[in-house]
Length: 276
Image (cartoon, rainbow, N blue to C red; front, side):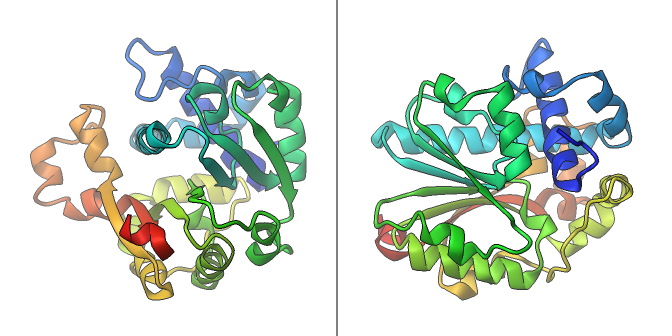
């Protein structure tokens, strides 16, 4: 696959740091499949981003947090549909017990993923759907997946690249086509992005990535659309609890509250699922 594509670079970045985590003595999420997508050339190309330790730790911590939420959801419904928008090289269909997975992403990325990790080899059902995010609306690809089941939708590591308008369209499409769904999504405040995400944004921008122009609190977009926040949790805060951030916890709880609270993992529900 051509790693010069910005969408590919962000997906490979996540794989590199998950592969490094899995190879460590005490993994945070332990994604042993991530290494299948990584080689020395990928590592060299992404070195400006992967050498930034705290963003890498937060990224792997975020993945672990989503893992935990999906595992919890599958305990009561092991056949639940799990829809990953911007799936990248996500390997949960291979690592978690249960679930019917729908992976949505760029066609060339999914083709490369199929070469390295065929869907037929997953212990859980996997359907891979190629889309062109820049020209194909959320209404179009979610319309093909419409259903009144309690689908679990994951939008991980994607929201910061979307504009406010794109987030509004996504929220409306989810509520229209999956009326009993649940959304798991990481959201970053504008203040967090400016103060603490600058180095990573600069590294990704130099690699061709484009970030969305967003409001101060992107979570409000989903609330105003009619979604109900069920829970939200600080990603850097949890990394600190795990002892993986090079920042004292007392500092996170005082002077660096924007670091603690500005990047969180949110769970939203709507329809009948909002009252479940």
